[in-house]
Amino acid sequence: MAEEQPEGTLTVMLAFGANLGIAIAKIIAAVVTGSASMAAEAAHSIADTFNEVLLIVGLRRSGRPADRRHPLGYGKERYIWTLLVAVAIFGMGALFAFYQGVETLLGHRGEDEADPLVGYVVLAVSFVLEGISWQQALRQVRGDAREEGLSLIGYIRRTDEPTSISVLLEDSAALLGLIFAFAGLGLHQLTGSAVWDGVGSVMIGVLLTAVALVLGRINLNLLIGTQADPRLVRSVRELLGAAPEIDWVVDIVTMTVGADRVLVCARLDFRDTLTAGEVEHACVRMSHELREAHEEIDEVFIEPVPRDDPELRERVIARYGPPKPPTAPPVS
Image 1: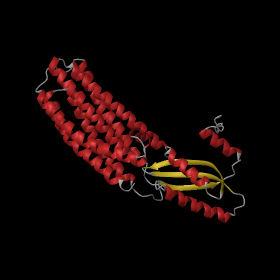
Image 2 (image 1 turned 180 degrees about the vertical axis):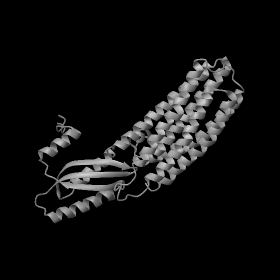
Image 3 (image 1 turned 135 degrees about the horizontal axis):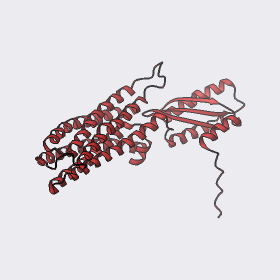
C-alpha cells in the first residue's frame, strides 16, 4: 500500500545502480577476453539496466490519480511497462546470447581466449553486486508475501504488483547467468575448445527466454483483467450476504485495476419489503463497509436484481459453471 511504493522504488534503484556498473565492467571484459558467454552476459546486464528505467517510469506513471479521462486511474499502466521489460529481456538479452552462442558453436569465433583472468574478476565482482540487489528484491517480495499470508510461489502467482517480482526474477537470472558464464569461460580455458563458451552463451539465452516468458505471462494476465484474490472475494460475499437487507448474493465480479486496487461489482437480491430509499442507503453503507474491511477495494458498484432472472442466471453459469450440488454429510 502506501509504504510499498518507496521500498519498491528503492529496490528498482538499487538494481539499476548495480546493473549499470556491472554492464560497463562486462563490456570491457568481453572485449578483453573475446568470450561469447561474457559478451552474452554484457548484453544481459545492458538489458537489465534498460529494464530498470522502464520499471521506474512504470512506477511513477501508474501512481497518477484518477481523472475524467481515466476514472479508474492509471494503475494498469504499470503492467504495460513491466510487459515491455519482458520484451526487452528477450529482444536485447536472449536473442543476442543465442547469436553469440550459435556463432561460437559454428566455429565463426576463434579458439583463443585472451587473458581470462579479467573475466573471472569481473564475474566475481558482478556476483557480489547482483547478490546485494537480489537480497533486497527477495526481502521485499518475502515481506509482501507474509503480509498477504501467502508462500513465495503463491504470492508470485497471485500478485498484482509485478515490479518487485520483475527485479527478483531479473536478479535471479543474472546470478545463474554469471554461473553459466564462469563455467563457459573456465571450460574454454581448461579444454582449449570454444564450444563450452558457446554452450554457456546459449544457456544464458535459454535462461533469459524463460524469465521473459514468466514475466510476460504475469503481466498479460493483469492487463486482461484478473479476478481479485479469492480470499477477498469470499470475504466480500460473506459481508454482503450477512447484510440484513439482502436475501441473496446473486453474482460478484471483481477485477484488479492496479497494484492493491480492486474493482467490485455485486448483483444483489434485496428484500422485497424495502423501500427505494432503504435500498439506496443500504448500498451506500455496504460500499463503505467493504472499503473499511479491505483497503485495496477502490470502487464498489451494487446492482439490485431478482435472483430468478433466467438471462442473468445463464450469464453467471456461463462464467463460473453450474452450481455444485451440496455435499452429503458423512455417514457415521
